[in-house]
Amino acid sequence: MTAPRQTVAVVGLGAIGGIVAGCLRAADRHDVVACVRTPVSQITVERPEDRVDLPLVALTDPADARPVDWVLLCTKAQQSASTAAWLARLCGPGTRIATMQNGMGHAERLAPFVGGATVVPAIVYFNGERFAPGHMRFRRAGAYELALGDDADSRDLHDLLDGTSMRIDVNADFHTLAWKKLLINAVANPVTAITLQRQAVFRRPDIEALCVAVLDEAVAVGLADGAKFAPDEAARTMATLLTYPPEAGTSMYFDRLAGNALEIAAITGFIVAAGDRLGVPTPLNRAMLSLLSAVSDAAASPSAAT
Image 1 (cartoon, rainbow, N blue to C red):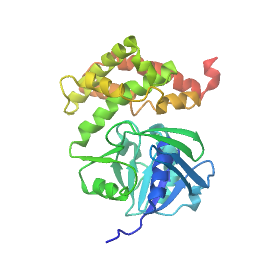
Image 2: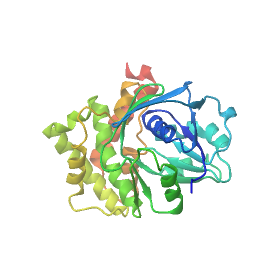
Image 3: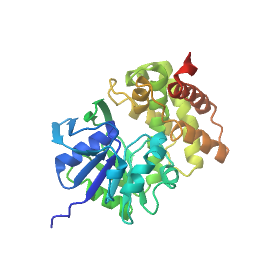
């Protein structure tokens, strides 16, 4: 039997949101609308296997939005509060919100804005790059593009994305998976943003050694928080990071190039806060947090950088 079409709103058409929206449009199983600041009428995604060029319905005013079956929240974590007007219009009693954001703690962060809607976390593994409004490049970065929990809402999200080019892992230990992705973000994002270099920078022996030390701290915090890690988890994480294309950037790197505030609280800030809560020292992550905060604050107030 053919599954019924559902209504899907993609909030945020950056690299992640644009790629997901393009893949959904290419599968053409659901009615997709983008919620954006800059008007677009077409979505272009350069995928490993082909190129998507399709018309896209886009709204720029929350007043024009109506309740949908699914909201795919693809903004940066620090922009969650700015989506409140969209969420108020898009969320009805049966709406579910899939968070496709880096870091952890998203359900708690969104609670004030979603009413009774259910938040379904998803872990994003693919690498995206945005060239212009509505134009993205999609790079695979592992065996899966997304990871989901093994519960009813997550399985429904898996079905929603069925037929797209997204490969999805469903795992009962989602907490450990989320921590493992956080470990990658804990070094990939800060180091590329601070050095203003793409992932080739991790081929430097001194940078690799620094990253392993940062990861050792984060692993200790994750273990205290109940994550199930291997004894050599830091080294495994670094080995995974070194498999990514050296020309690939990160979300924090691209935000710094654009002069935007950085996605700190849900990544490095989360690790430091969790370490404080659990009694695990994180001096290197705390130093990274101070450097990132200074960069981010300068972006928010350019006069502070002079």
